[in-house]
View 1 (cartoon, rainbow, N blue to C red):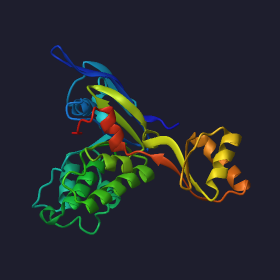
View 2: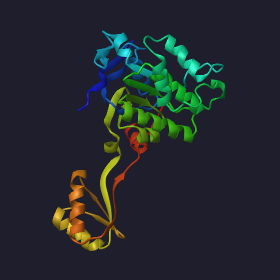
View 3: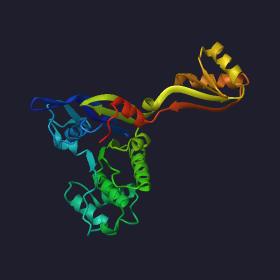
View 4: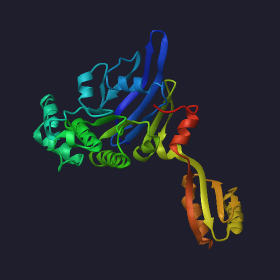
Length: 303
């Protein structure tokens, strides 16, 4: 198993006598994208502020690449790149000049590091244009390059697609997925666009009322456990599945539905084919992450 780049351990926050965050724990492994979701007032923003050192926890700890924020803040944060909503850019300067300005304030960042970051976000052709002429999507790419120039191992994105049109959202999502896949960078994404989190992330942590209520893979969260088959002899197939695999199926037209563990499915499908059944369709029924989120958080909207 890959090592944890970010480890949030039993994090707690109390303001005066009010407990805001209760024993929050999750981690992000190398090359993984984790979605962090929570409704308004859930403690999501407070938790993010503690992760980046802007707010001091009253209990627990955050470690980044093995360095504790409590005892080794500088080393821990040297491994982090952030985009908090929109990037902070000077419009009268080129994208490249903006990156150079930041590099001059960052220890050890070279021209090659800037060029590498520009390539990673796909801005080679427009990086020397003035920021004032950039689209929102291009500005967001330069903001992402800003977060990458010191080659962090953890990227924190808070509402990264705010203000982007559907094309810009798609492009930004694909860049982030490519970064994780090809460079091994770990990504923590907080977003109110739950459908985007479902498309972008490997795992999701859902916080509500200051507590983590779900921490699982996206696939696990959206799976209903139901499998649907469309077969040429549905009545015969229904009887066969009952007798051979003890499966109780629901028959509707030529479609059979049953609760089946994913690990059993390949063997069942293979046996159906060997027994002469023609399967024209098979799939796992899934729910949307948004529906799950709303059911878990008492139908509160996300913030």
